Amino acid sequence: MATLRRPERVSDEERVEPKLDSVYDFIYVDSRRIGLFLSQFDDSGLLQQIEQSEAVTEGTDNTGDRSVGLNVGVLRGQLGGGRKTTEGRNESSKQVYDPQWTNVLTFLDFLQDRDLLQRDIKEARIGQIGLFRGSLTIVNAAILKIVLASAFVREQITTQQIFIITQQFQANQLVPPTPETIRTNVNGNLDTICTVPIVNYGKSVVGENTIWYPLRDEFVVGSIGDLILKHSTNVSGEWHILGVVDAVPDEFFPLTIEQFVMGTDTETPMQSMESFVERLARVSRTILGRPSAAYGVTPIVIFRQIAD
View 1 (cartoon, rainbow, N blue to C red):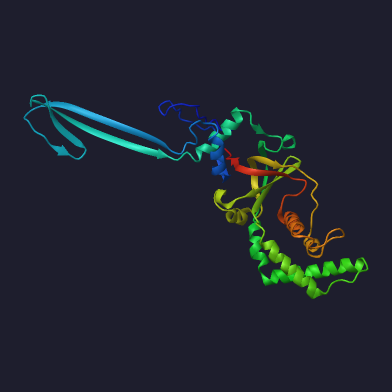
View 2 (cartoon, rainbow, N blue to C red):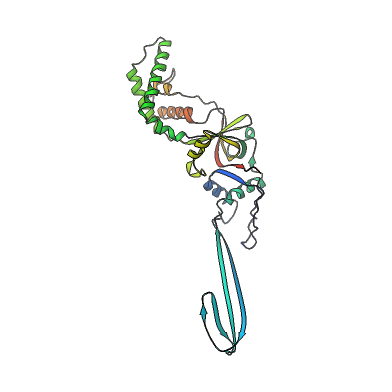
């Protein structure tokens, strides 16, 4: 872990220059959430900007005739009774630093110093901040809306659903709906599914467990498209995922598209608006959401240590 430290409640003059003992490769940084957490550790709020100024003054004394002159960067002026003059040269510089990226390591150090990091996913409780190490899989799920808009893809899906639903009805010795009815229902429900927010997400295998987390494009360093083109879905290397644990494995009852369209033994497709919304959420999670056996995490930082 980096040894970057920010001394508590110190003046700018007393601030210690931090040093790193490691270099990290960050691919996801939720700077907004980091700022919210860091502002709770400092009574003054979140550090937004650091200015470092330097000024150098050089001067010499000379005697001579009374004279006053002005040159670029040089000032001559009379002192005393006209027999003594001084010549001075002033130089100054100012550097402005954005602490956004060092805030990441500062935040990690704060959590580590205060023993706020949970490293064992099996012991994690909802609301804890965890730092977990494992693999990294990224799924560009947002592209699904573009894919489902394709007439070719829709035809493949509806043809498959017509076959599956017909087989299920015949197996139960029931009269299946007509292919056109199934086609209309499938297309209508695919349109509905496309209105549901679909987010890109990642998964990591941590020991014998899996964690699942959404990925917001604005916090990805680079782009998800770049990662997909380089690695497909599995990004090589050992990765650290820092985030808030907000879901644990549960008994989720999945709902397939055909069940959403045609209903189940205990549910009809449209019992009420509330049941419709609940079923829509279930089918969305079944297709692209967190698996029932996985832990859910809201990611803050995803990074790996650069090899020597």
